[in-house]
Amino acid sequence: MKLNAFFHKDQLEFHPKYEWALGNRIKHPETTKRAENIFRSLKSQNWINLVEPTSIPLKAIRDNHNYQLVTLYNTAMALEDETTFYPSVFPQRGKGKPDPTNIHHAGFFCFDSGTPLNNKTWQAASWSAASSYYAAKDVLNGSKVSYALSRPPGHHASRDTYGGYCYFNNAAIAAKVFAKKGRVAIVDVDFHHGNGSQEIFYKTDKVFVASIHGDPREYFPYYMGFPGEQGTGDGLGHNMNVILPTGTKWPAYKKALTKTVLTAVKRYEPDYLVISAGFDTYKHDPIGRFQLETKDYTLMAKEFAKLKLPTVICQEGGYFTKDLGANVIAFLEGFRSNL
Image 1 (cartoon, rainbow, N blue to C red):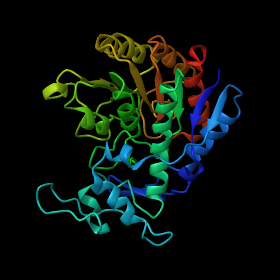
Image 2: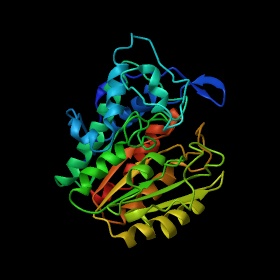
Image 3: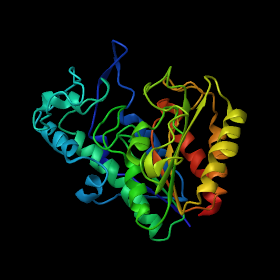
């Protein structure tokens, strides 16, 4: 059996050139080279089947995101070629009424200065969402594991906000597909907290969300990702955040993953699993600050594979482009015996 990997070439049409980080203008880390490197690595493996998704039904996006976000991205389509819009005004919510047809109101929906809009944002983001949507459909159709090369990534996007290089929450879209059939667990192993996934499912017991990440007091997104955030209402007890210190290596990471997170996942007894697979935990990553090695990703995936759950793997971060493809393949290798 082959592992199906979903990706559409139009995901490469979006080219953010720079971002503002802590007051400095820097080269944007979320380049097309990331997806291109992964794609080449996938193509080199005869046990991986590359699949181009068809367009995602708008309802699948609207089930996860406020219509105003969709309207804003459509507004950005009117920008001239090579024109990029960076919000510079971020009004407090509840003070003023936003107009998503006015590009200057984008700051109401955005929570950082590193996630720009241009006339290709909708195109790339919707195809990225389509990759995760059809990966989930593929699993419902009988595949045990499916991979979505989702670029731009998604786990920072909430129902009505975008940021952290994320426009639509691809993992949430896959989880909603599964939730129609049973209980779902999302496990986020990106170096940064998956604040968007947490927000979307914070009040429900239908989806359990767990994230292992660097300390939000020091690292993006700064304002969420703490252990006390455990859900509310029906969702109380269905959200878990595990913070690991800077410099964490595989033995300590494995302990947190297996003893804390996966133990909680087993207790929840999900029918399906979605993994937000970020590789900015890699030792050379310019944004992350853990010390995992390529071989560790295979070991990590094997721990997930032991759950024996129908699984979608959604690509999130990972910005050391040179080794990104190898790290993704190493992770997928951990599931190979389960195909």
